[in-house]
Length: 249
Image (cartoon, rainbow, N blue to C red; front, side):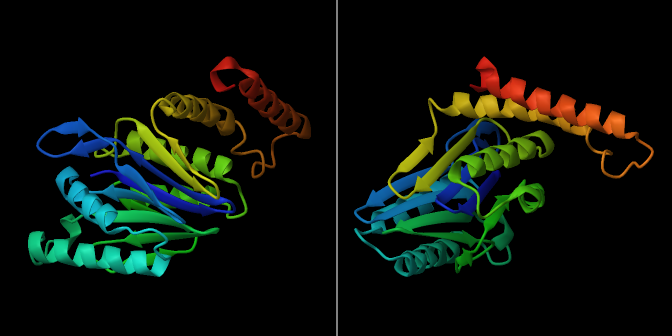
């Protein structure tokens, strides 16, 4: 399976996913795809078997037409999924079928949808996570998601969510892919920008070490004001040094 996460933010949509497929053997592959058709852009991410996701992706992109409106795209995706479920998913086995996240840019507006165990797609107002790492992703997104934040902030959050899923779920792994859909263009954070995502992941490791010293600052009243000040200053210094370092520059 996998994890796929999608976020609406003030200036676009961000989708992220790991790259590990689990079947009889584990293998690597992209799970985010994008296509543009005049005023309409569509990004699609999925959790589930590689063959099933490829089948669904190909049919959705084949049916995407120029200037297709979001509601029409959602109806089209529902029809593709209905056909897929009818033909290939045994009755009572819907939980084993693929789950999708797809983002749409139509003119200057953004729309995010999710499919769960079966169609139809449901519109997402904030964020959604699917796949084996989805529960952990939802927990982290609920903690850190800010709808007023930019694509840049949300890309960092998306990378963090997928990174934690790769650490804690046996069915998530490999690299992390991120695709951001903005007003003007698709901004794929795929090769060669995976190096940038790897830099974020190194930052997350260090962040946990630094953040751990702050965990009790607000709740442990036995700490002296002087000790609290020292911990806050140390954390501030660490953040600034990291921002200036070559590995995160």
